[in-house]
Image (cartoon, rainbow, N blue to C red; front, top):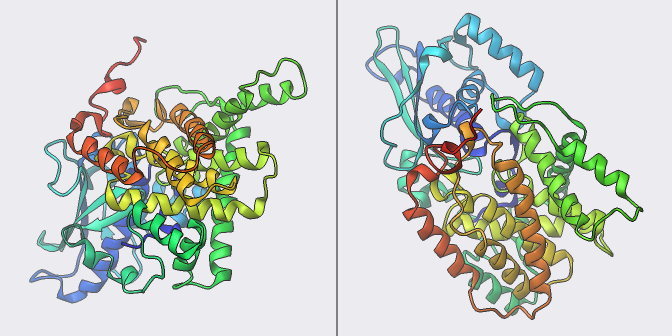
Length: 466
């Protein structure tokens, strides 16, 4: 299944791609379906009231991930990429007072977020642990439309029917013939060897089947601009993050310390690791605050890839900003293989699917721009992913803060180490990336649900006494 670079890197808002961006997108899609149903909705009359029920992980950590807020914003009409923060906040205030939404092309619909967003703490829906049900009723309370959505990670959303028939769900993307249709690392390497092209060049040619070179270039520039802007905002903000854990922003203070040490004898050899961490932490502090971020491949892991790109630009000899495109295309190729064959969802695979996947993507991108061969790039991705296997997703209080913010910093450090090790070899290694991805899939499948973004186990229930 073809996944575009713009599928893997989506501009949106924090704190979670699966719990914030996905439900918001689901709400927008439900309104589209409701418009399509129109006057033929059912034996009942026109839609007059909405209700949304959150299941599984969306219920257990929905408050901490602002899922209810995201659903409301989606029903108001916002998309993740189209959020205007101050304006959106005022629209939510208006909704709380009026208890109605005014979707284009539909009648005014009664919707009280306090009553009409239901958190169901029972068993998850059968398709995925991130399930939500949208329902529309007429004035008499009769159902006009009911649709089940699943937020499957990275901001991707599918209906129940699409989940059960993934080939049909991706029919539009896969209807286009791609010159390099690899769906595994082995196929990717074989095509690279046969064509003599780099992974980024193959990915670029695949993308150019559905867009112009100018559109691709503009889109990639927008991704990096948003990523870098997020780093810069995170490096200057200070104060306490929302949510009740009283976690303080640290990126600005660390960056100031590092700046003071520049050119002095106080700087330790490992200072570049501190820069990596602070770049990543800046992004994830912004994400935790609900700021504008890029899924890479998820919000919870959004800091790893940008941090490694900034590390490349700021700290690597011979770095060339023109090669950021190559970094992003290579990363997206690896991320697409992981998503296709396993998962990038913390609710499905634990944090190995989020930060682990991000580290593999970042390691591959860095290896590429430092001159790595396709075999070395595949090796770099495998090393990074291998050493995240088994990592649980157990955020304290359901917030994307502890351990998520620091974890992105450590994931970035691992990504650089993996790329460096791979570049020291010739690309040959014992464990293929495909097998490592399969090991991650199996581990996620057998991992206890309480360790998969429910905040019912692990660090989330072992909090310090206050």
